[in-house]
Image (cartoon, rainbow, N blue to C red; front, side, top):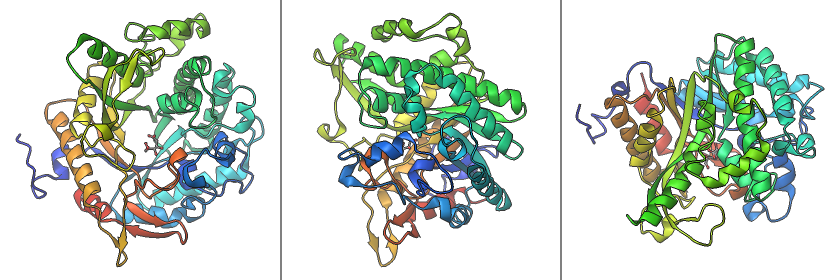
Length: 452
Ligand code: GCO
């Protein structure tokens, strides 16, 4: 079928009746109420309180006040015709110290959110870990401590028993590459640790936890759909020079292969990134087998493309990412290139892993500087971004590639981690002073597009 560019011809029906349309959020980015109702401290509470860690000194205490305004926001999801809502559970609302004593008020809260979604005809999709590790566990080494596999399994069991009677779709983890890379290698995200010897054990234990979490869910909830999500970027070399091509392949391994391949039972992709040999130090007998889990679906989250050249000076990887702002291309507020074919290329790449049963795009979206004019937000660039990336998803589908759903990142403008409140990714504008919501033109476009 020919891909049509006009709005009228490009419609939801082309994706098929079973395609899942949704929107995604994360607890720490939207909830606020950081110390309400018995919640314990997470690494993001601690990190964001330190000077200089978050741009403009922005504080997460209120965020979008979703903890208190969840009904209003779920009503907006309904108003936008969005049938699937992906959100995460804050570990420290459930287990304030990470393990041990359960906080019933936290469980009650998420039960209310889940029940309200269902009462409005919206399917809840739970992410179990979206980066907010309990601080009490970080003190014991956090992701670098192998014990985290037991701590995490306990958290998964509590959630499965508490919410599993109503929640049919579960994602064990959100983007392990980002929380290990930014949090344990570069130190620019919580908990702010740096260096290879923090990074490698954090990666190994995160991958062990993904599979362990999957197994816990399956044992307790044999009938639900269990997935996990990966951050991906389409990687291309800056030139055809063999050194640039090899550098791009190492970056591709780091960004796109490192986490999925052990999960599929393929072990670490040492062939593509020799420094991974050093991971041997943390691998115990049986680990390669126990990192494997047969997920019902894999979520890919993609925003951009990276262009890579060889760099002698970058340790371990000897590669350099050529920033989009130096390439004279269209960029978002995050400095990421707008490059719609990236999503098609990543779907194609992940389709080569034959053991993946289902693939969903569990995040895609863009931050642009929005302006409120006469009570309205006209954001043509976000609308164009979503439309063009979706056209590439459709192209993949029409070529027979697996792709079964698409979730926009994100519902409301929110707390964008170390970037604070400035990058606005929402379909809905939030005035962080008054908490007033305004559906942006892109939100209205998405609502019309996915309307039955
Ligand atoms: C991620 C997270 C989100 C981010 C989004 C934009 O994918 O990094 O899931 O929390 O806000 O991706 O950076």
